[in-house]
Length: 335
Image (tube, rainbow, N blue to C red; front, side, top):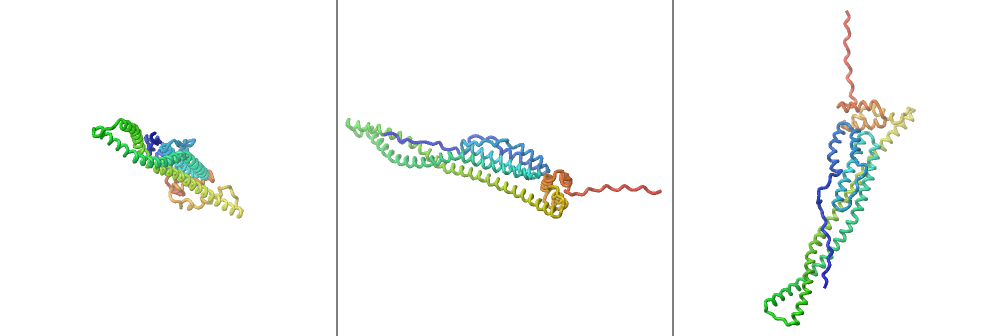
């Protein structure tokens, strides 16, 4: 009788065996405080340029070799998308809303590509572990059943052997030949039992690990879907804000045309906004006020009123602080 074959699968490594290399998430976390400080210092344009310089020219390759490399690739992906989000935020604060929308759209496209890479990498792993789980269940069921068959037969033979060895019982030549033939078969049975005992722990471990792997794969998919959802939300918001402002300017200019007022592109609307300081001062905080003034300067480059208000903010003043008039010189006394 041939020993029952067992196909053994190594248990999956659920934790990293070696430290992961520095990734974009770690770099993002390291760089974020400095960028936020620049934004607080009203250096939005400089911050925007700095963030852009940190983003790789090409998306890092997605390594789908195993669960560990997939995890590292997902960390890199989160870091990359965080840089895109930060880049879009700095562009928005610099007044470049069109650029911010473009960046958010690129972020969304990148998130979708990451999800596609993830699905491609995880498909064979999912199929493998589905097979491992089914094979393990089958192997355990057959192994346990076969073990129950073999153990009593082997134990009975050993007991009989000990009895013969003690001399309590004698065998004829024919009986001895039959006993030796049984011994040959029992030796094979013992080899089979050893294989079963060696294989069962591996199959049981695989059966334990399979749902853990399934959860990791599901969590990865959920994370990738979250990346896409967040990018979609940000893209929609950036588009809505830009559309809303363009509509407002169009409506304003249309009303001016009806009143036969000369229109100079978007400058007319910007001038009208600046004529009422409340449009700026009602915004909470110098950083947001500066962001709005930056936007006005994108719509009307070189606008003196917006430039002056922005410079005042950078100097720690109110945007429309009035300049102190120089004191009048005392006139000469009449003699």
